[in-house]
Image 1 (cartoon, rainbow, N blue to C red):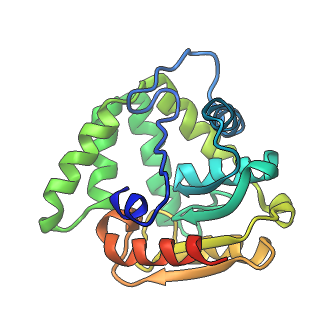
Image 2: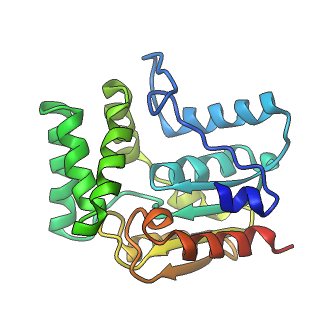
Image 3: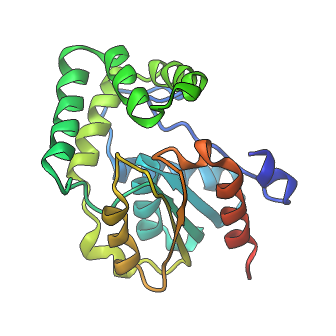
Length: 224
């Protein structure tokens, strides 16, 4: 956020309903609805079209936003995300099945610890794990479960060609949640999309490789 502000941008970080400080009304949670909520927010703020940056789940919402509201999308940045969630290995399937079981049977705190360890596995990332745990613990369990289901059903493959905004796909080379090969489908489907790989970056590449990520993001957004 400071890097964007210092470069003259007005960054807006949004908590989707049920996450962070945004309440969830319990009346359905879907990627499509979240994209619509983002459009309403921009219209309420009267700031016109925006650069849209989405990480992981946010990346699916960003895709849907660009498809449903192209007039509000200046540039699109998709980070550690996918067009369709289809793990390419048995290990990948087992991880997502484990997450589905844990969040439904053991609760959100156990789920948060599982995901935190996966995203920040190194001993020197203990503080990042703690921050992640605190963030996930704020989520409404109903919204979290609905979000997982919506992500499992999300599939933009056939519509990627409709995205007209200049697009950058940012991939951490060590992402074990959404493998780099799975992110490649976004580049192959979106016209003129470009992919950058960040060495030593994991699924949370804007956090674990912040300096390199900020440099790539600002270079893309600043280019006319």
